[in-house]
Amino acid sequence: MGLVGSLEDLALAELLQIIGLARKSGVLSLRGAEGEGRIVLQDGLVRGAVLPGGPTDLRGVLVDGGIVGKEDFDSAEAEADRGDEDVETILIQRGVITQDRLEAVLGDSVETSVIQLLGWESGEFSLDVRDACEPADPKVLTATGIQPQYLMMEATRLSDEARSRPPTDEAAESPASAAIPSPARQPVVVIDSHLDALEWTKQSLSPLFPRVHVFQHPDHALSRIRHYLAGGALPLVLVSCDDGRADSSEGIGGPRAFVGRLKAQASRTLVVWLAAAGVPAPRTISPADGIVTRPASSQLSGPDAAARNQPLAERLRTDLLECVARHRAADGDDG
Image (cartoon, rainbow, N blue to C red; front, top):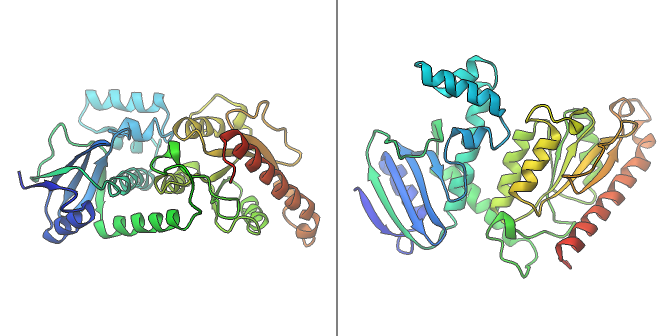
């Protein structure tokens, strides 16, 4: 055992700084009222982390997170059991996921876990200094590791954002109890495969919502959503349904499946379909909470596009505010 102590005497942020400066390797175990968390370190960098309720293995990150389909993962896992290649290598070789995307997804999972662990103010810690991993160690590992200083900066930024919001009666300790900011402060995450639609939506919403984040891929958006949830805030999420997959049960990566997983993990998050004008809307709004409209992609080009689409921009803002109001009323939030 390399080091044992109390988080009241030595906070996790200070502990990670010490380990980073000393370039130590091993597993840091944390035990507190929240449960048990573990952080894998290599040469002072954070390579892996798990926390109570979070993913503990590659399947939990990729399949439960909607990044890779269950059938693809099971097939790769079966091949890995029969041969010498690991599951990650097989998934990359089959084109199911790229190396860069895999590393980004794993890094996001580790980052989210460590940021939440940095919020633990009490408990016990123990550092087992060693170079080799053991079977009981966390299985979600990044290839290169993350600087502890970066993780602490992200945790500080999220904490500052949470403190800047108006106080609420509820404690923002978890996604289930996160605070819904006022519309003027509520962050917005927009997911749409069309760049022109993303640009139009961001411009249309900026007068109401100062923080509008746009993404073409759901897994990239999920990183931003998790950051807000970890900081105690519920973002407003708009998900495009104009590609026809929202009504399809095929493929775990479809919009409906993504929204279903998001609502299952953070049920109080307001999720709204973003439908293109002239394109059939989903047969049912569920599992989302509402639906708003943007121009079709063909309507977003041309010298008079801005003026022509101004009524839709005004309608988008009005309909979205109505969605927020209904959501607050259903949630019992008067603010």
